[in-house]
Image (tube, rainbow, N blue to C red; front, side, top):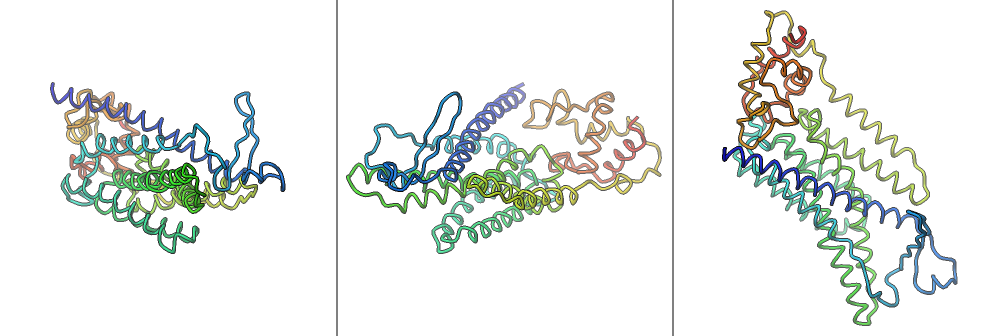
Amino acid sequence: MEALLLNYGVEWLNLLVRWLHLITGIAWIGASFYFVWLDNSIRPPRPGSELEKAGVSGELWAVHGGGFYNPQKYLVAPKQLPEELHWFKWEAYSTWLSGFAMLFIVYYFNAPAMMIDKSVADISSAQAIGIGLGTLVTGWIVYDLLCKSPLGQHDGLLGIVMYLLIVLAAFVLSKFLGGRAAYIHVGAMIGTIMVGNVLMQIIPGQRKLVDAMKAGKTPDPIYGKRGKQRSVHNNYFTLPVLFIMISNHYAMTYNHANNWLVLAGIMAAGVLIRHFFNLRHKGRIAWGYPAAGVALLLVVAVAIAPRPAAKLSSSDGAPVDIAQVQGVIAQRCAVCHSDKPTQPGFATAPAGVMLHTHALLRQHADRVYRQAVQLRSMPIGNLTNMTDEERALIARWYESGAK
């Protein structure tokens, strides 16, 4: 009973923190999209106008929610500091903190099931967690040093190098962690870079601008330029991170033999599509970017498509009845997928899929076949050691009509 209550409490904690993470993530990414759009959409004031004399580099008129808005951007800073100044930072901090909490709740708390796949690497829970945490720290340090190096003066080249390094991180993680955990740690690494930009560069730079104005000094424009660069980087990171956030629902991606390459293709597509919108906000329409992004997604989809069923098993063997399959399911799957899971860390059946009766097994036959035979993504990390013979047995039962 104590174990059940603990697992149930963790499941509720998972739900609430995941909800918070979603809410704060929407706020942060929404702000990122809006301000990059605003920066690309503002137009310079008329030469000799009062706005130009006041130091305004661009303005925009917009209508929304029944009102008119007139945001203005100053070249460095206004001549006089306003009494109230809103800082966009807590959206980023709250998103990262809730995401980091979820790493512990979902992955580190149940590392044997959620992080380790012994067919990938036979490591301990402590080692898996250490690799995950080390990735977050190393990712930020390498990225920050690159931005501060001479390479940081060349945004295009820096972007290519960072993309390759992220793909390298995905490759390395795929050799130590289960595919699902490898993906989520690539996303957590990118998210750490993004919040590091806010915490270590954007906000400190803005504070220096404000402090200079309070001291009656002319603010150094370098802080604004650095903040703008890191803000744009964050904007390009968003679509890859959003995909990784939902990827745990799609085993066809993270459970592929070359899952790191699958992720590389999808991330590249996200960047290409994001670049199209950033250019569009500046008034430049370049359909080649979204076309390339969609083409890349199609290539990935075709490349990872499940093999034809005929190649997965032979239907020439002896007939398989549901009782035989139920025996395999009871031993390998029902520890999680039942009305009363016995696998530590699970209070209810994942995704609500229960397989402890013949009727339920028939009901979910398509899903069982896809996950256990085609994708081989279940059991998670093959925690219960389902054999190839058992998968072939399930395939023969399903292909003969799942009766």
